[in-house]
Image 1 (spheres, one colour):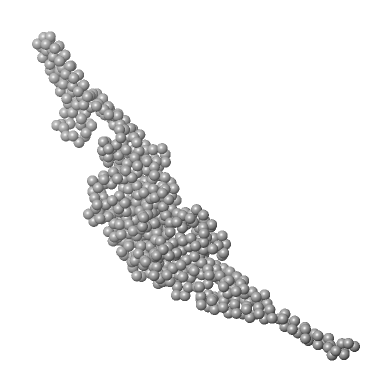
Image 2 (spheres, rainbow, N blue to C red):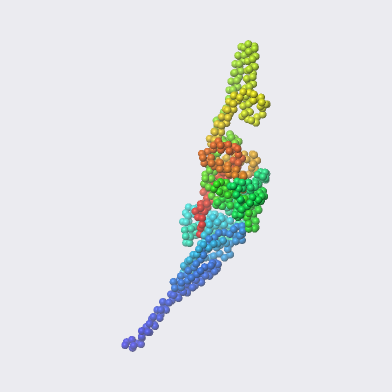
Length: 593
């Protein structure tokens, strides 16, 4: 009754109280809808400005936006065939966090989809891309970036715990070009970020690319005959297994008739610099720097390098790649892509050649070495022989004075004949020790008794054999010292130009190895022999004989070993190239963004 009298019904209560409460309950949904649509619109605008293709979905009730972005694996464009894409930066790089890799033009390959659930537009992250670490660093080096020694040393020692923002590569003015990025999207990979401006590019297509080394030709006045210096690819083919068809870098097979073109190619490039690309697997490409590297067209035609490929059955390719890497490693250039095998480094560091052997080969004077051989006083021996014969002559004269005239005359004649025979025997022994010594008549010597001659020749031979044995046991010299003496010996024989340093001379040898397969086989065979006796306890007489029979090849091989040792010394000192190599070995693929 009271409700009726007051005029308020249950319907009124529901209207005045329930409707406002219902409106208040819908307001959060309306706010979420508006906020979600606004964030979605901003995300789409960001994706459109960054030229990214993505699939978006929104849940207005829960205020969640799903964005599906593709994940890419990228690699730089080919330096020679796609020059415009390689050297130009992207016109519209992405401004979304994680998209620093869009600064450059890349060849991309979709490898998956990454789904993100965000509430606000600033939470959106562009997926990082996967890229080969060595290709990334090589690309930045080619543009003009400089490695930061502190950053690489820190990365090698601390790994994934390297602080974010640590610079690995710097550009002009010390600006960070490549740095450590947060591990948000790395999935256990090394996470990096890149930054680059057009004004930081200090190199162009005419510059020598990273991992490439230029080998100089020998000076004109020191060139060998054309048939030896500009050898044919047929010579190289004969050093390969069973004369297989030559396969070029492009994979095509060449017939025997094509060897004529290889021969002409070798002759054309014998006096031009040769540029070699050294990859992780060894020599990849060898081209004429003047003819191909600076060309404006898209194709690169490699010289024949089948005899320098790294193979399991032959060590020629390994020796060449190691020596070429050592030649290209300087304070300004770091050819660190190929890692010289540890056994080669250990061999180059070891002292393996006895100094006495160099004396026997005529490379070093005996006065330049420590005392290593037994000294025979030939002057004293000759004096004793003279005194003994003089005493015998005096005794014979006294005996003759006591004889009858007929016996005296006969004894004197026998004595004079005996003395003449002794003088002739001495001359014969001298000729035996030195066959080049001219004598009056060999026929006259052959009529003399041989037993005394054999005794002296046997003594000389025994002394020579003892001297060779002592030479093999003499103190071993440093590889660099051996190379310096061999270089002097080569210059004295006019095999190397007098103006060349040890490293320059080694560079001309590498140049010749590219063009001359037969020369490559001989010098690598000598290196194999050298390393074998170094690993087996020292030089033997057969090894000394091999060196004596091919001394020039040994002298040339020593230049390459000394150059490898110089690179080894830098490695022991912890150079930047070693830090780079170790980091490349630990992380083959990285995340970039």
